[in-house]
Amino acid sequence: QVQLVESGGGLVQPGGSLRLSCAASGFTFSSFGMRWYRQAPGKERELVAGISRFGSFTNYVDSVKGRFTISRDNAKNTLYLQMNNLKPADTAVYYCNAQLSTRDDYWGQGTQVTVSS
Image: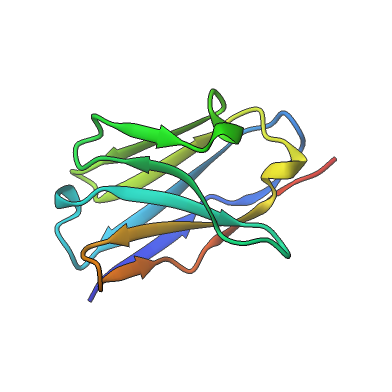
């Protein structure tokens, strides 16, 4: 049974930092690329960052480039998102995603990130 469990969200002031984690289980973590998405109130879910199986390749939405870093530890079956210089526009629920096939698309429960003074 595939499970993705996010943690690390919270309330932070503008300019602050958070590190999100996603603990994965139920599949061979190192065999799949992984993604972080986010969804702000009243908006569609947005792809924030992706990483290849061994971390060699990463990609980011333009709005977070230079501020966010996606990484993974395959030994710990864990995906990370380091978020620096956070802005109010980054406020959203952040989701971990694993697409194992065209039919098998898995999501975590999400973790709330709120950036506010």
